[in-house]
Image 1 (cartoon, rainbow, N blue to C red):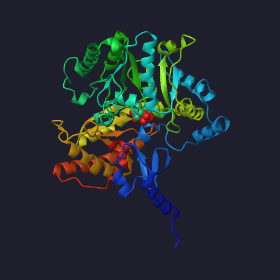
Image 2: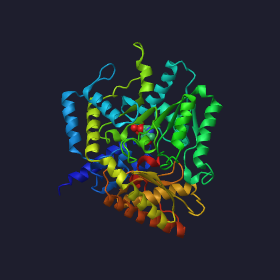
Image 3: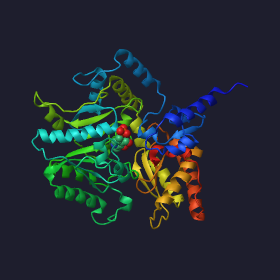
Image 4: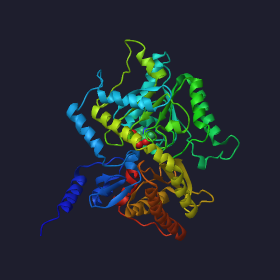
Length: 484
Ligand SMILES: Cc1ncc(COP(=O)(O)O)c(C=O)c1O
């Protein structure tokens, strides 16, 4: 009998995976012992694993694949650009695609956000923004400004500077001591805010905390405030009305730069081209990556206001003392430019804006039917549902219960059902959805149907108080690396 080549290939991949691969933020032992989820191909909103099982990618890879998988136009642009100029250094040289892309991004952005410094990833973008802020202050004679203010639970990347502004204790602890000067304030978790409903609301409480922290540290020591338009980690915390304007005016009052980390929220995720547009503020620096190329090439960068950038350009002897070998890569830039063209031509951002309410209604209707959902929050195609033990008291799960629930029930059932989304508990346990921005109403409804079945299972188990079922960790593809 002739062996099936696909089966042979799958077996060989698993064998080599066990011996040589190392996944990010991933508990490897279970996968080495029992096999890893291995993705083979993608088309539109769907992925297929090496066993031929199809998944709806409700996480867009990692909040990245805005226009979906398998677009030939992007492959063609990459091939043409590779033949013409496969690489160019940005150390002292420009190149056509990176100039075109910077001009296009500036054209899309509001206000005086006109200058782009490219990187190859989101962490590098955040790292760049932090260094840019520090050098900006030094050039202007404020050399004591080195501290940052960011938010608890927020995720801003993994390099040391970016990690320092992260607010996830479990991610910080293994690498401490981190870059000095990083201070953390509360995020806008309105569901669990003690001031919810009080006069002034949770918005005022958070703003006061930021200002108090600045005053406590000494405004002359603070360089930048780093905030996402909608905070991913913890489960899509949106800013209450007035919050972002408040942050902007605090930054202005004390001469601090406002860095809007839009590595997830830029390029349509919230139903606007940039995240800050959704909430009506203009930051000093926007960090971006992921959706800029829909993940077809690794690319990121900082979009910078003229007032900041000009400080580096005003004198013939000045430069930003920072650079990255792959920053401004011509192939990545050409692909990103084509991605933005497709997003514009196919009205991808408008698709999100048009379906935002429909998507929210679907999830809120799940909340009304399922005891285990306490909150639905987010914006655009970036939504989270918080899982609770008791909806009336908002009682949450113990760490062990949360671990069992997410890994052994939610992730396992999502895997069975063929839906990739994030089930995680960096804060309270949440299920997060971030589908490709091309997803239709029918596809959003399919996601909701799957979740309905999965959540019914969770409800039933909670009602019966049955012990949670143990499944091999390798089946956690549904929650991806988030379960680190
Ligand atoms: C808000 C935010 N900033 C920065 C990063 C880091 O990006 P990267 O993983 O490309 O380094 C991420 C990654 O998810 C992110 O969500």
